[in-house]
Amino acid sequence: MIRVTFHGVRGSVPVSGADFSAFGGHTTCFEISTPDVQIIVDAGSGFQNVKIAETGPVIIAFTHFHHDHIQGLAFNGDLLRQDREIFVTSALCGPEILKKNLQDYFHGAYFPIDLIAIKHHLNFVDFDEISKIFRGILDSKTMPLNHPGGCAAYRFELAGAHIATLFDNEFERDQRGELQDFVAGASLIVWDGMFLEEELPMRRGWGHSSIEDGVDFFSSIRKNTEGSKLAIMHHAPSRTDEQLNVLAKRLLAPGTFFAKETQNVII
Image (tube, rainbow, N blue to C red):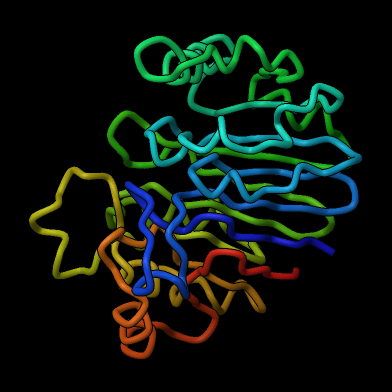
């Protein structure tokens, strides 16, 4: 059994208040857990709500380093424990650059302590090494996405299922075939639904997709991925619960849903 938990489903900045209480206001972070391994994808503000597993390997995989995907790394109390080795990786760069990227953000003019320097239990590793280190437990693949500064899609194969991430990505029609191949057979696909189709013309080059593109993409592969689901997240910070509920009725198709903070999906 795999449990996927969404800890943060917003893009750009966290939001709060009654208008955002149902879907949640934390930025990007979700967790894939089995009895053998815990994978945490990105560490936006939702990372503060992750419970680090007591046993088994823990992996934090960063898709990229924009602030809404890393800002929560300092605010999880479990990460202060020194008795758990935690593997930190990204397909965007090697371990030294990854470490420097995080250290630059959580240090000096931007943060009161050198966060990375005091966390000696963080083991920075090449993404290509993850499948080798955890052979028999986890197989991982990646491909580049269309996002300013770069972003990595991930495909994690574990416990007899596949989970694929396709955010942050500005979807282009010529990506369709490659993305279809990448997610083939996936039990769960996580899509970037920052914008509506009508909002995209003024936001070209921002590196995000539309809800409609996600639903259309999933419809094009669903016949070959029986039982799979598409979770749409990275909700625009201005998008209220009421607006998302209206859009769900108007735009979503069978097998698709808007991810909510604290939501669990069992595979």
